Image (cartoon, rainbow, N blue to C red; front, top):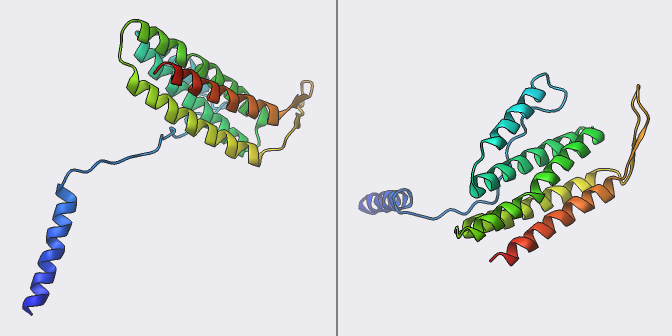
Length: 183
């Protein structure tokens, strides 16, 4: 009986120690949940508010954070559209993500020339570009190499999805290598 009480007491002490003692958690880079998709009646309004947020993103670090959020958002949007085989819209979203990614390093360079510590942002760039590359790699496995988008009212559009995804992955690798030069 006494052994049983000691055993329960030990369990409670261990549980209490686990809950109370500080610990450090490591999380992978997390992409946002998909927001409104093209075709939704509020999508244009969301794009307008995003542009306004961009105008009010003063400072290099704030601009960097805004651009990264936009790149993440458009990547997730593209991923979702690829999953639903909406390839033309997916490629447009991926182009938007690529554009935002190209603006990350100039913002960090400018911050560095102003003497700001950008080491935390560089770590975020490495994690984000790694996550982006993983997502793009996963997409490239599931989509066809080429696709002809036939619109009812417009001319057909040939999409070289392999090349498009490869270029997006190369861009992310390039951005990560440029970030490494800033260290």
